[in-house]
Length: 169
Image (cartoon, rainbow, N blue to C red; front, side, top):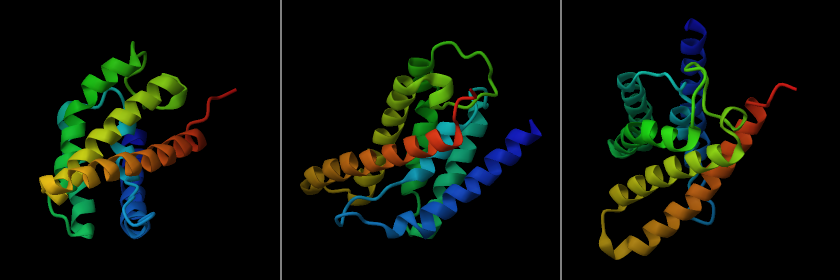
């Protein structure tokens, strides 16, 4: 239990720092912005209480918002995907043997983890870009930014998952 709390705290801090100091300064082709910090929400253990998932997601989003100057945008999107997380986990995880396990390729299998990550990422990014743009005239740009940023974010999350959560052989 203490080990999970320490691990999650370190992960939270490192992902916020990675996002605000490196990835927020990356704008591929002028409009693609990877938002890898949502990996924290994806990686919370299966048995994390709902209130803790929502609270930690809000804190994650508000920390990114404070540094990005978008007060509320990331917090709302993070809380929303945290709210959807149990439904998506049930859809893509099947039976969960150990509630302390974290979703990853090694625990869910590649396809289930990919579908779970795609769902979480698309919803998060769509909300972020819709709220920050808030104009119907820009809907094509919002959808394009959502799609392209989601692809890059998903690829980075899959890469990180393969590095940090290799199957024990």
